[in-house]
Image (cartoon, rainbow, N blue to C red; front, top):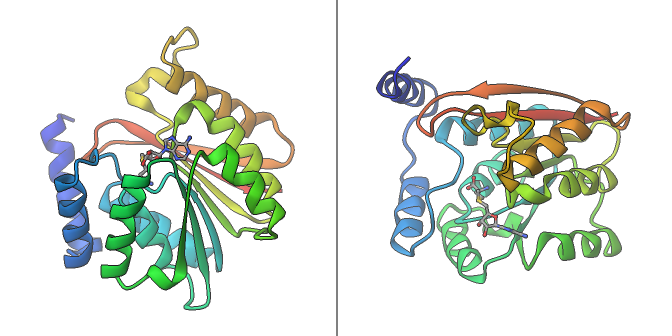
Length: 221
Ligand code: SAM
């Protein structure tokens, strides 16, 4: 399929299954106006996260990589009113944009944004007793994916659902000689998913509005 075909199918699926959401659309427009890169999940990907949260009956969700709060909003809408999303973001400017977007979407009460390097924030979550999380979405600096995966297990429980985004990388993920640190990090995470007895996993290639990529799904055993 051509890129145009893929975009057309994405549009059709979004129109048929997801629909438009004025708050989310405004959030993306504000994020773009504030200079944030458009590297959020697609609407279909956001709805997938939302459905996974509901299917898992998740109340406590951990997200690594907030950006403008787009996926955060989808996740927050998938948990009950007394549930909580803790989302980790390095850039204060991204967190500020996300805060406004979460407010507009009516989910800010359920979301805590922790600003700083995720590797520094994750041990603090453990210390302050936030675990166990029911669902973890990993979508930040791909170089650290294996580290985040290990933390997801430590902060999870048997049955915790883990989602790792961008595991296809336009096919580069299958190149063992890749020199791209993001792909190397993704390969390390996939190898951990495949070999660590604490995890059981699969991954799907995706095509669509954001090109050729993939998503990994795992459960803590
Ligand atoms: N999950 C978001 C969505 O779909 O709407 C997109 C997240 S974007 C792909 C990745 C985010 O991770 C960026 O906002 C970036 O600033 C943040 N990030 C990068 N390195 C990080 C780190 N070491 N710790 C925490 N966040 C980081």
